[in-house]
Image (cartoon, rainbow over all chains, first blue to last red; front, side, top):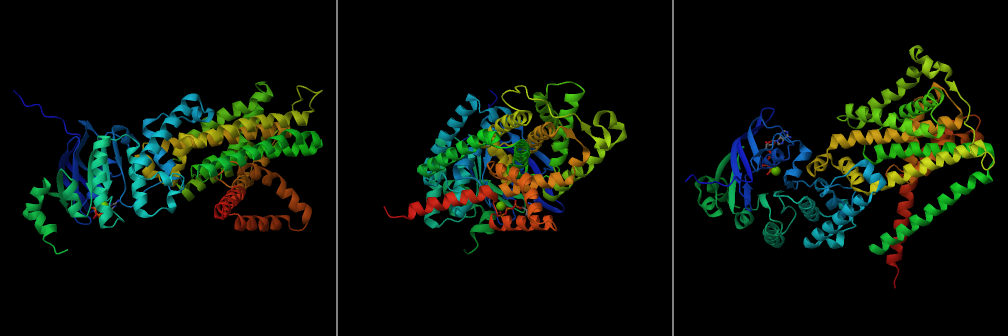
Length: 260
Length: 328
Ligand SMILES: Nc1ncnc2c1ncn2[C@@H]1O[C@H](COP(=O)(O)OP(=O)(O)OP(=O)(O)O)[C@@H](O)[C@H]1O
Ligand SMILES: [Mg+2]
């Protein structure tokens, strides 16, 4: 009997990205399975953020194919990606600065709603209902992430670490299947990084999402990931479970061997 | 926090009630010329609303609103004089035509940002009066003479004279468009517009079709401006190309900035500023009214960087803070 292999949630197949003469990604292939947390590690400039930018359709892919649930992601435009269940946070935070925390999270629901200029201008009952539901959902998310107190605060006034958390709430508001977290531990102290680990796992259970997490805190990644992909100079250096990775000679040479 | 939101909502309600009462009562206390001026203010309020939607909320700088104002005016008057459309319906037609043209223009310039977009819209503004004077269009536009059709007569002469009836027509359109803008901006569409202004890349990743929203916002802004143009033409009783120069576009921009481009309530001040201040300064100084106007502008911008609306907002904010600081 032929083995029925479950289609992976996400598949990178031989993806290359160049910026002028810089090769940011060179023939990258890997998969993300449903419900898994995949750690993506690598030194500065290895191409981790570029992987995310490919998924958000923010950069041109020169070669290869990316599939989300077996369908070509490269056929989508930027704004269609979230409709296919991919949501992200940004390494340097990209919130809507003039909006409140609540409005930022509400913006995250955009892709799950039908907004029209005319229906909104008339504020039809359907608009009112969907706005009401979106608010309830956004408030619930804020509560789960411990941000309720900050609902009305302008995001521009928040510290970096809190902004990162608001971005997480905004990403979750779109009911993603795949969550991309780019250095979520930025601005956190040691203890808070520990808590973030627990939170990330909770998020995976509660929202039934797969997660790709990019982080420089190696212990953190090894602790929470099911599998880890290590990039170096745009290539996949190694791939495996955290235990395998910690024993991998290349990885040891590239990171773990270095005195910290 | 809830309490503060409730209080500011109440303050807004009181303010709205005051403005509405004044708008309904004032024409009966004023002479015909002043009622005419009041109508012009309302027309400019609508135009400034259109500017705020585009430049304030969507972040697309436009120096070409005068072009859509002219397009609205000419569409309205041609519909009135050639097609015999009832005059009260001509702003609707003008708005529709401007919406289509504005959306198409917005789509063409969707990739342009900041100064480049400003330049493209500047081109519109600078070209418009000359296009309106073209011989080829003479049969429709009346060339450099324009069209003198006379103010439409009041449908209820016993109740309202012509100027007052036109004023209430303007007020009805302004009310509808203001309410529409208010609803739009507090719903998902308004959020999408502000999102793509603040952070277009992140806006796209939450599912906002940035180019489509930008061009539709352009269309909606043109609709507002076009309705204003058609109303302005009715109120004046004539149109001519020289009323729609680049200076009109700049005045709409000034009204927007003075009122505060990111709060639609500011449009009320902006509209009033456009109509009243040039008159006022020329009464004060014969020799150099525009120097005085310029000085006033600079002072306004220095004193209220967020426009009148921004000032009002920060006063409310300060009041809220001192209330909290007070011991109970
Ligand atoms: N938009 C861009 N234009 C030109 N070069 C780029 C662009 N984005 C990324 N690069 C280059 O591509 C390479 C990979 O960058 P990327 O941001 O993906 O690295 P990273 O692994 O996320 O690094 P870090 O850990 O510092 O965030 C780098 O050499 C970077 O300079
Ligand atoms: Mg990076």
